[in-house]
Length: 304
Image 1 (cartoon, rainbow, N blue to C red):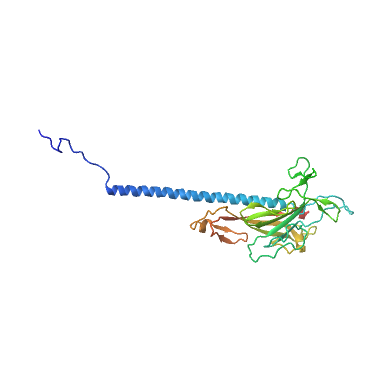
Image 2 (spheres, rainbow, N blue to C red; image 1 turned 180 degrees about the horizontal axis):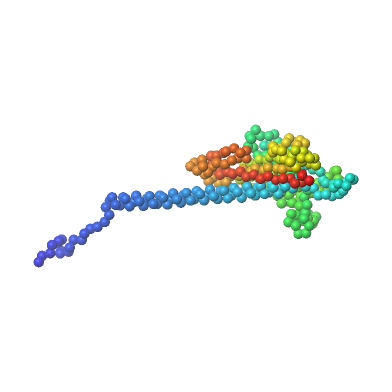
């Protein structure tokens, strides 16, 4: 019986495989899956960058407001150091708070009582304000955390930068006291503070674009009826104005941006919007995320 098939007597095997159409369909499905995975990864990466930027912005704003609050809340404080002829306490007299509207300080070395220490105001309504506060520094008894040993080996209070400083002479009382005079301003995208213990200001918080200050004005000066009632919030009064005596609270607003660009053209219209310190709607066009933060501080020493 003869064999049929190929020469040599071996049977032909059936050849199997994928057709060209099947290969193209499988390749298209694979590419679609890979594309979806890449899109999900990029979306997750962008969302992570956005979340990290919000955390950084919040931390910077919290630090900036906390540093200023710690100083502003003590504005006008003076320790009693004697009893007057009529039985009242004798205090050191100095302005507790002052500031410049949309302008910087002329001389950082000038004290808070120096007249006309504001530069010409900017015509830009979003230009940063400046604020200066003063209070009598003190050192807590015992192993305190608010003072260090000075050059004479005695405890001394610290300014806003953590430096010790010299005492100020009071001509009216004839004694010397620690006048802690702090100036806060924005320069080069950072919040600066100048204290009496250093000749130049130093950056304390980065990524702060502007500082806006509003002052709560009382119905009457301290000691008069209505002294504790705030009737309106306004801009800084002119230098030397008697209205400074009516300031009993301070409202601070800082605008903080992300340290890096995190927005693209697609996300800027939705994620790049924010409300500025003037309550105006803004939208970022440079890729940076921005937010504003506000706090109000009552000047308790002005209400006593």
